[in-house]
Image (tube, rainbow, N blue to C red; front, side, top):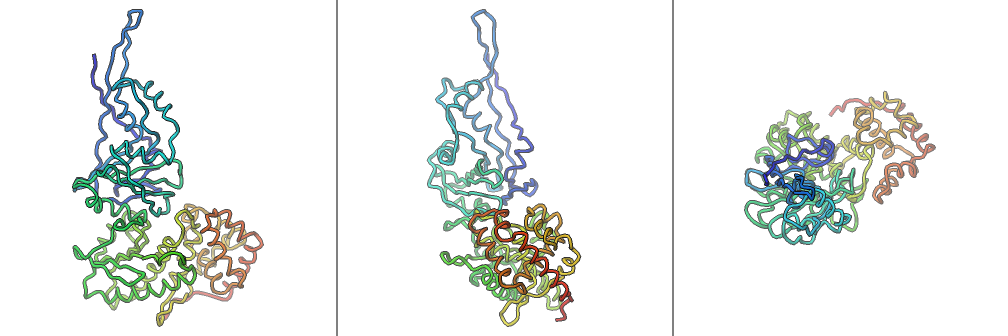
Amino acid sequence: MRRRLAALLLLAPALAAAVPAFDQAVPCPPLRLRLPKVEAQPIPALEAYRFVARLPDGSAKEFDAYPPEMLWRREQRLGAWMDAEGNRYELAAPKRLLGGPYPRAVVTREEYDAAQRQAGAFGPSALGDWLGAWVGGACGKPQRLRPLGAVRMALFAEVGGKAAALVFTLKDDPAQPYALIVTPAGGPPAAWRAPLSRALAGFGAQGRGLSGQETAVDGWVTLERAPYRVHTDLPRRDRKWLESLLADMLAIRRAYAQAFPEPSDAKPPVSVIRVFADPAAYRAYAGEGLEGSVGHFSSLNRELVVMGDAEEESNRRRRDEIRSIAFHEGFHQYLFLITPPLAAVPTWFNEGHATYFETFRVRGGAAKPTLSPRLEIARRATGLRSAEGLARLLAYSQEAFYAQANDCYAVAWLLVHWLRTEAPPDLAKTLDAYYALIREGKSQLEANQAVYPPQTLARIAEGLAAYLGKHAWEPPRD
């Protein structure tokens, strides 16, 4: 006698929190892929068959058996989605190849586990075979993509002429790969462009035709002002403000490059700026947590995203606010583009420079730093300005830095501003030395120990105190 049983796969909460999410309704701290609007698809029921075996003593023993491939997929499949066009997305965590051969079409769990143990350890070299077996076709040569902050490695491959796969590992768990498999509704390669464009842009695809470049459709136009590419839906009558912002971005870009020269062995990276005419559309695109902003850098899409509702001549304060935020977020974008993929830039260094550049004012095509209102916050943050406090600041993780955001931003700004404007030459050079070590792959701790030992931090603390004794922030008059 046999009867079919249905079972539902339940993901452990810890596992669910460690993998990417694909919809705004599903939070994911390490990574968030912005795919087109999708709906979750049910995981196929696990087919189980009940058997009754007669033992030598005449008694009966019941046991369940399963199709081995379904067990293999079930233990590695994390979820599935479908968008409005019928493109299917499947997320899996490859752990091992399908073992075998099996003696029968259905096997017990014990038989399955024994065969899987014989399949041996699973490593990076087996990913191509795994994808081929999962999709049912030969896996093409993988194309390496530039990973974003939470990602350690990312590859793109075509599989079997009928699907595409995005394989990646997270920095928090580099030993566990993940595979996003996309099966287009309309057919092979050309149909992959739309469903993959946003996902691939988040990983920085280096291949032609995979970066999701905009075209002049649906009211959006593209403006080229190398090294910037601007996508906007602002009406033509409101472009004057946009041209002004773009001119200032070109000036601040020169300031970025003076502090952090572009790699000599590579083409100048193109920076994409997306400017929304409608604040509601901007907020929808920005997503949860950024609704109140007027600009941000999306490492997922590698875009500097700006709310472009400041075209009114009388709205000068609003224009200045957007320009300052664009300078800040534009630095994050620039540093992201010129830094090697596996280098982890410490938060104090990244945010300290972004707050430094946000104060710049452009006059006559040249961008120059000014004082920041953060100076008065830094004056009060005495605990972080001592040598011991600076050591803590330089060692803070991203979470610790943002937990004390006001003080940390202020002191990080003061540190970078002083080192780049008034510090003695030997101390001013420490920022370049520090970044060089980070580019080489040194850790935050290693760079801190090499460049900022206690005696150096003591000198810096004295310099910051003297600087605060000479300067006070006043609102600009012009």
